[in-house]
Image (cartoon, rainbow, N blue to C red; front, side, top):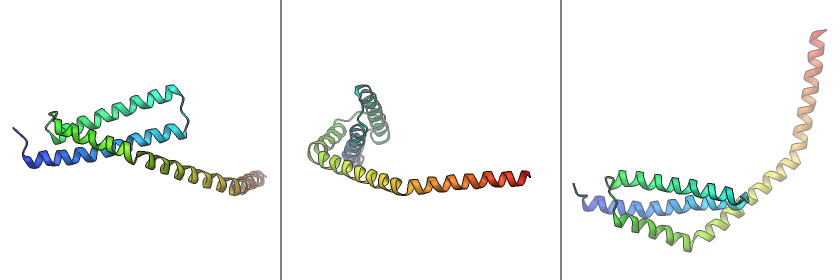
Length: 139
């Protein structure tokens, strides 16, 4: 059975959105690789994982939207949106994410430096009190 025009239009528009989502997934892999400073083996493994996820998402999309048939308009919409976002906003989004993550990590680091010593001192005091209470109960 052939797909109706409404189904084809929905598949096209959803493929366009899927291309954007896959580009954001690619950005996540890219940012994690940049922040964690992966070596070549880690990058290779993350690329393989990305390709497998890319394939599975496209496969499930094809089953759900086009009855498992490969449609050229779906491939064009997905590829166009992926490349459009990749060559226009991708760098801005990537730099923004990296800046935000670095700011958050510095805030967490400053918080842990200020309050970490106080918390660890309190834990040590509590453990000493606990040991004293154990000795008193034994007597």
